Image (tube, rainbow, N blue to C red; front, side):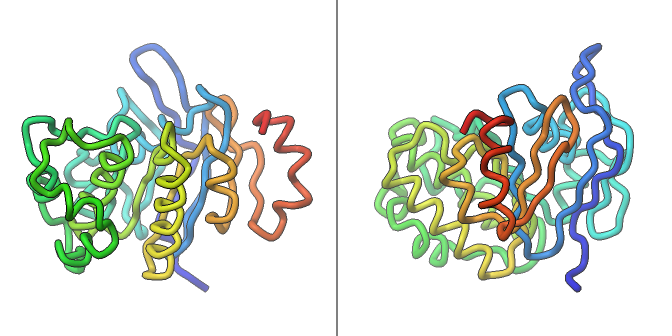
Length: 234
């Protein structure tokens, strides 16, 4: 049986006085792709931010490969092999695409080389010397993901990577997630685009009011579609 990479138990989170996570619990096995589904404001992005220590305050338990991280600083959590790709992408406009790519520090051995990244994202090779702001939305999203692949992170937290992008780019990102899964990466995704997430994930967790209210596997998906329509309006 695969080892647990991430184990979240009774996680509560706050932004100031606002209590946004209400005892969320779930786990992600090594090499698994898990998608957090839910309406806007359900607590999915806050869960990602809490895992990285980027939330006002948090309590509960977040174990990464068995190591408790709830009291750890963000940079130490990242060094356990976690790469976070936030919804806002965080591309530096004054740097070229390649400079953006080379910016994050190495977290561990086994990160992708520039050659491997450019083989996966040919667009980025063509735009290597272009300024960050001159890249299209799709290219910026590819760059945001590519940047964490270079670091050696093995658990990827991907927040709404398909949002607002043309179908052809969404298809490329879908192929990328499938490739990374085959290469043994562990992936936790937040996705509003159910069509994008549906064929990619091993398991789906439905989040509402900062808690997981439903959990089901890829094989169970057809029988759960009616309930999902109710929860998500998909």
